Image (cartoon, rainbow, N blue to C red):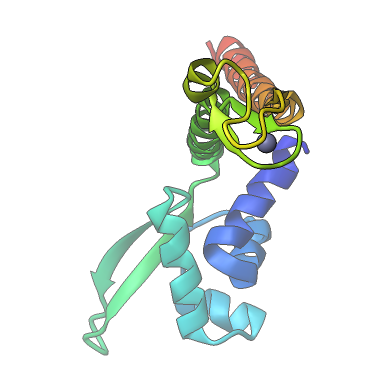
Length: 178
Ligand SMILES: [Zn+2]
């Protein structure tokens, strides 16, 4: 998955399809929810909701102003494309943390199984039992979780690579602008 796919997936997850459409519009300047609703032919409440979801993850900003004629509060929105990397990185780190916790839990859970299927015990219990089933006397065998661990490690590695890519792009951008 590349960066573009990730950002789309994130936006669709938090702000739905409407959020994604607004985001991909790339409005150059500030806009009101009414303007975008009219342009897209979407209910204003749906637009507003999507924008607030984007705001919650840091991808949109607004300022409020009272309309002199109607007395209503108007929201002037701006999509924060400049925050994309920051938000993406934060979400990736969140996912990474979850995967790491899962990995740690899996690493701790070493099991031994009776070859006849009577018991499933952890390492300490297996040691105490001398790796012998307390019911049938058959040997207890190590249950291999290495594939699960490998998969989790692979996912974490991919996230690290994506974060490194984002950081790399940021460093390059800074060099150009300085
Ligand atoms: Zn047994």
